[in-house]
Length: 154
Image 1 (cartoon, helix red, strand yellow):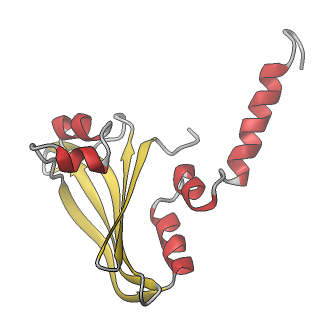
Image 2: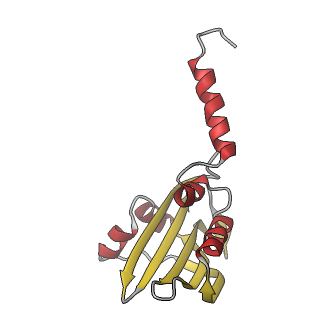
């Protein structure tokens, strides 16, 4: 309800030769499925970016929708990027690129684009800001207040 059926948000940063690489994969709960060409898949949103430390900006950014078969989905959802890379049976989901930006991109704009692509997932908002969105914290506070009332209270 509050997390737009997100099961997890896997994020990995790595660095090589002055370039920091970012990857994010948002897996949905198993109730979220799509049918493509008669085959059922579990969709996931994927982001990739490269940050040039010397230029102090992102130089590449792209997003895709990955489609996992049932076997792939259950193998991947409880693994992280590190485990996937170490596993000899690499999971390679079917993927469709949604957008690609090559060229200088400010961090502020990159964060905004990430948040838009991962819309309705407060885990993404929390990752970038360190807190849940205000609307979610208000709901959580109301639930906490209700649960702390004595039986029969209102």
